Structure formats: C-alpha cells, structure tokens
Image (tube, rainbow, N blue to C red):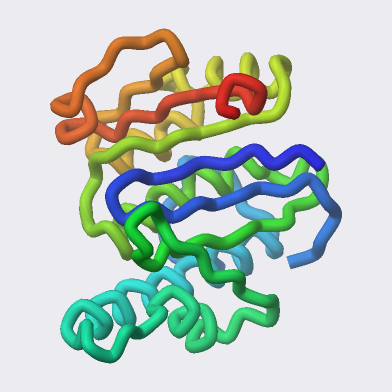
Amino acid sequence: MHRPSFWIRNNWIPIIFIFHNCPLKFIGEYNHMELKEYQVKTLKQIQGYLEQLADWRKKAQGNPELEIEFSAKAWEKAQIQRSYFPRKNGIKESLPNFCLKIPTAGGKTLLAVKTIDLVNTIYRKKRTGLVLWIVPTTQIYRQTIKNLKDREHPYRQSLDIASGGRTIILEKTARFSQLDIQENLAVLMLMLPSAS
C-alpha cells in the first residue's frame, strides 16, 4: 500500500494519504477550484479535529499532572467515526496524527494543501514551518513538484495564501537553514524510497 504523507514540524501532525476508495459548503475561498461534497466533508472533519486538538492541548499544558492524552481526547470529542491510534514522539509526548482515505483521482493533493492551511491556522497558529511531503512514485513526484513550484497553479496559490506569500518548495538536495523554516512555509518534497 502506498502512503504519501506530509508532516508539519514543531507540533508535528503526520497526515497520511492512502490510495483506497472511501466515501467521506466548506467556509473559505479555494482559488476557483470547486470542492466535491466528500472533500468539503473531509475538510470539515479535519477542521473539527484541529479545533478540538488545539483546545485539548491547551488543557493538557495547563494541567500536566493529569497526563491527558490530548490528541486521543480531541479525536473523541471531534466525534470522528473511526478508530484513533495515539502515537508518541521521541521524548514520549503526544504526537497527533490522522489518515485520510481518498478515492483515486479524489483530489489528495488539493486536500493536502488545504490541510496544511488548516493545521497552521487552527493548531499551530503560525504561517511558517517545515512540511515534509512524501510521495510514492517518480511520476507523482514530478507532477506534484511541478504544480507546487508553479505560482499560477491553484495548489501553489493555496500554499501562498496559507503562508502569506512566503512559500518555498524544496527538493532532497536543496540547502536550507533554520531561518528559512522560521520565515517561510518550507515544503520539502521526497519520494518514499529516499525518505526511508
């Protein structure tokens, strides 16, 4: 099973896009790309989870003695009818995560750029950071990087709106610094074999 994914560093949320068929009016302007009903529903679910996640993270930080698994609690409160599998980072902190099951040709890249915006706006409350975007094949890599580098493409325009016009698209061999990540939304594209 191919699992292209992306991660947003500093308050990481792995979001894994799985290539399976699964049926799933969102508020906001989407660069003249009309969303399908299941895409709207998916983004609303993501938005609901992220709102709960931000709220429960704040509660957990305010009461560390309670040892609240805030990502699991947020999932429960968001009432998503799927199982949640809690994860921890390297220092045993809660690592929020979720999967999206999107049908073939269902707009995974579109949902990915919209999800980056939602994660940054609702959960991280910042426009900058590092997104690690992993794709399974050379063909998808070439298509995605071409579209994300094209400032006229709706995907790139969505990222530019999310970052306030400060998006940089990077490849595996690109040199970048901590300052690049602090001042920009840096999207690092990788293929699955090079990410392992």
